[in-house]
Length: 297
Length: 195
Image 1 (cartoon, rainbow over the protein chains, first blue to last red):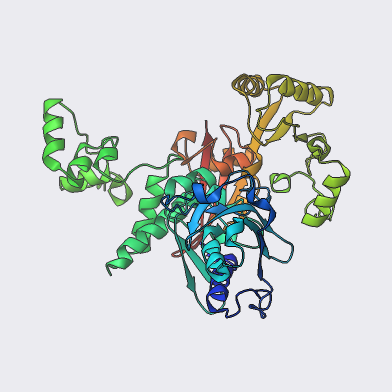
Image 2: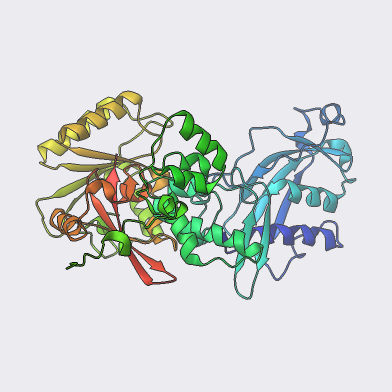
């Protein structure tokens, strides 16, 4: 999967910015070359009343719930759900997360009044950055970035083409998505794309072991698998549907097929190439499709 | 999509090259009314053959009911249009689905249903998707004659296949597929649409 990778990198940079910043309170200058500063407003004084955070901040197991900054409509979410997390001995509360025009992530946090003046702001921000996911796609668990000279590929764990299509323009090159999720390809890009993808996957399997197999054979397999508009396995189970008995026998589990054929009194007409070759016959097609008739005096 | 199907679509900022900003502005003036997107387009080679594209207004999170479908089919009939596309956000209710299928089966008006999230990305632009072309009835027969084939001997493509839906194939249609090939440069194959 190809991505113009910016947001993930940005998330990382934010974290670095927090880590390196010396000044506890001046975060507006920490990150000059990029315009993606992170601004945090600490509303300390007035918001203590409704909650008794110290009471609620019992050592709850810290759940790093990913926060979806942008949901599908680009609205900020999270505000309704009160999310208490323990951080550096502090309990705090997200109130809202917004992404402003200049790609600045802003969020408010509420702290108990007792902590006024004792906050370790860099620690709080560092923790916050970990919890804010700038972009999230359902079913994609982890991702790794592979960079070459002028492009970045994002390799993800999990595949969800439909959701990736909903990412905003310019983030991903949709036309160069690749996945090994064959069913997903069939459902979203159709059977011809599946055939192409199958060929690629087959090649990758053999390449990995350094086995040279001609693309002719692999693409024939892919064509064969997709001929009915969907895909069939290329194994002995689907071989059951083939007409030639000896074709099945020569593929795999010969004894099983021979036994079944004997028990069920099946017949073999030696009309298909595999059967004919297995029995040492000339296949009645191609050059075997006719015979030479010579007049004998 | 209409352009790829052979309908006359303006290649200007009005249709194909409409920028996202302009679209947003237009939607704003239309008060985000999806009905305002409704289109009627004509086939390039036969202006009498028209297609409607509907964007029914949906209640938030509610599927489109049978009354909406029948209203749309009435509108198509009164305009003498046989083909229609419905673009939905949440989907159809089961009865509405049945009504659409009945309509299509009767052959009076063919209503295709697409979900909005299926149309966000043009799937035919993907690098692995080869060129698909719908064969006309005479060229389909010419093909079958030339290779002495029966229809059933062609490879198949399902009607529910995204590409088949993109081009609006119906069972019996044949698509010509031109794909790049490492061995032959270009490889032409055909697929028969089956239900």
